Length: 356
Ligand code: DP6
Image 1 (cartoon, rainbow, N blue to C red):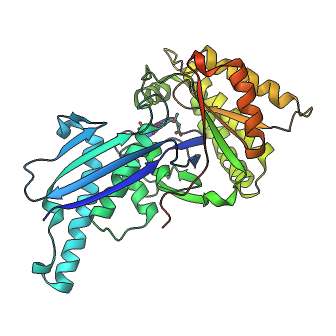
Image 2 (image 1 turned 90 degrees about the vertical axis):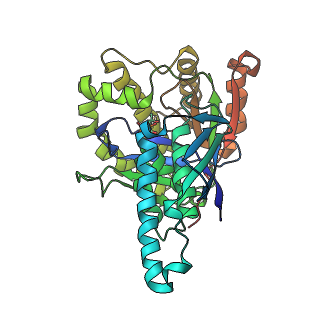
Image 3 (image 1 turned 180 degrees about the vertical axis):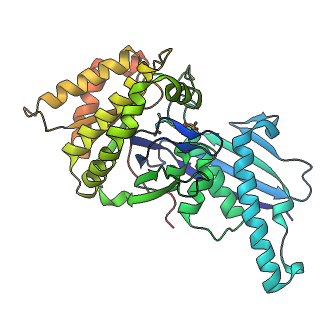
């Protein structure tokens, strides 16, 4: 008998950025990070997994195209191995309770996995985060794993670091952990999506081209060559994690915006401090930074903000603002960067995907 499950997974956009690994195999980060999970109205991954004793091998299709050489895909194999192992343990436990004949040995079946994104893959829009979160979540459903979301986050982390945060809705902390085996490097929810319903995210697609330097490759070059990154890890992020958590819990937009923009700036400064340097921002990205800075200047106070920009490993801007200011921001942005010139903007709100 074939078993099948489908689920969708959201994108998350970090406000304290993860950049650098202390263990590249287990995907253990050099600093903790905080992100917000976006609603799935605009951006999401969707994965269907079928397990059958009739399948002769495990196969994977990404956006309709079959991926070959799955044995060489270490990250995928790590996620499959970890979830299969838990399923096997569960089957053994069930066999003891209800008898071996009543338990489907799904852990031994090959899988057919179909995954698709409804947005540009690898354009710096966290497609690996939603993709791996969705894969691991769908596996946990298929295998009916009795496991907490935080435990599941440790498996998703081994697919792509930022994926561990997409398993939760709302505001999420990925604690870097200090143990060598990674057992304390996990995601936890700071607050659910409805904690701060006034907060919105506006995503400005500046380019949907595949990025030049992948996050995986880029961050390890930064680890090897940037002295600024070491300063950031030791002297900046620990304090920012505390201030950002407080800003979120107290819904303090001014503090939230200040840290978000400073952290995006420092992440891109670390990219520039990498040797040879990595450039993710382009002229349009930098103009968006200028426009948002000007817009914030209209408050007349240096510590008061109406919008916060942040950029991941690509030129696309995510602007966090209170909902009431979004129409004004769209007006300003579209005045400077009309959609006809290949700049598309759209909305997303924090939303809770996995309500368990
Ligand atoms: C800039 O999670 O894509 O978006 O762990 O190698 O898969 P791997 O990297 P990935 O890196 C994301 C980097 C970032 C910042 C962030 O999301 O925190």
